[in-house]
Image (cartoon, rainbow, N blue to C red; front, side, top):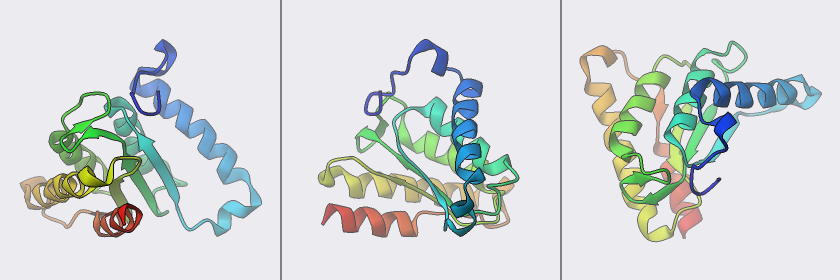
Amino acid sequence: SEYSGEYPPELRAEDALRSFHSQRLKVLMSADEATHAGGFAFETIPNAVEARAISRLIASDPQLVERKCWLSLQCRDACTLADGTPLAPLGQELCAALSRRTAFTGLGTNCVPPDIAERIISTLVAAVVAQRTAPAAAAAAAVDVTAATAATAAAAA
């Protein structure tokens, strides 16, 4: 399911996926080392429902709202998430959900062929620009793909 986005029935609803990730975060946050963590990565996300659940979790969880977090999507091609969701509108939706965070938030991709990584990042950059220029986003969004772009480019090299 990591590369297809086809999860078992009990993990197909957004609330179930949010609870799934929330429970794991509670375990991580309870560890003594959590105070030293520079941030939390949610990587290889192939499913739009899961991406929405994670974005809402990191935008609202009091333990995460001030922490660096990033979300890396797994795509089947340059325009489509692994589960078939069009990437551009999902990117805009995720940016909108994450725009109220005060801590750095990255949006990028991983586990994709290098020949499509740059086009995926371009699509996500366009989503950030669209979100930042939208009337509801007059205050600059906290979402930034610059680091994700650099990390993806370095990984592809």
